[in-house]
Length: 263
Length: 161
Image (cartoon, rainbow over all chains, first blue to last red; front, side, top):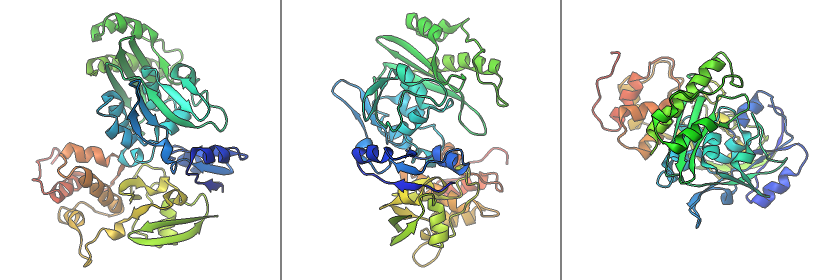
């Protein structure tokens, strides 16, 4: 790692101020950023640790019935505390990485990084969640802008994520066997407004909604409704773990499994 | 340099550290607690697992400065007060849950964290919990047996034996 200073603010206001320093970078749980720093793929001069900010942690349901999760909440906490409210989301959180990673990694960090194979972006997009930052609220449809790219401005912090709670939902991922990241992951959420289907791991453009499947499932929520539907492989990721056509095929299979498992 | 103060194995410690100092470096190089191992240094293997405020974390993927004010517990604090092995450690010995022993500190810390939140785990729950701990010697069966025994459960017959 290149040398850097570390700042440990305990309030959001102090964190925002610290991120105003030149070449400052926010540090969530560090489960992606620290390995990145070790490989010298990033060289911030100041790292602003967000893990000491109590006001950014916690899981609660607000008056509007939205599940509100602080940006600094770990996957392990979401797995436990969201289970009673939104089991599909809690189940997703309980299968990210491994237990020790889940005790550090945070939902805000995952969404800010927007790794094309991360799990949380699929949940946020399929749920129609709102990403709350220190300056504004961004709908998930506007937030994700491509691989490792989001609507966040320089120095903007994900302070909270607000999830509408669907009637039924399910996330199924096909794990890349070495890294355990999603080779393809599909989140299906059915609510009164219809069905949303978000796919992670597959596309060169990052997480995306599969609109044909959404239309089919909105008229009939069954595995059979997906018969004959497929996604084009043109924009799919191709690497040694799977070709573009393989990933496109997996999108269909994972979507069917998610519909079958939705509860 | 930043000043960091924390409690390690019940003792208050305070040092000046660089921002980039990892918790595992701090434990091994500053405090000379070399029971915590660095296997891969890439968050994969779990040899560096310690408890921070009671939760298992990979100390190679956390900065020392982030442990400010935290209670850190390492393998050095696992033995009984008289120096004898505790239940989990003794079970690893009794059931041959180690060969070279390099992964064992992390295995013991993970097993201890698991049994704290789930005192009677099933074989599958143990295997799932150890997803982030890699052992290249044992093939895991004897580690699973040791943890089952440490939780006071009968040993199941296992496949591939």
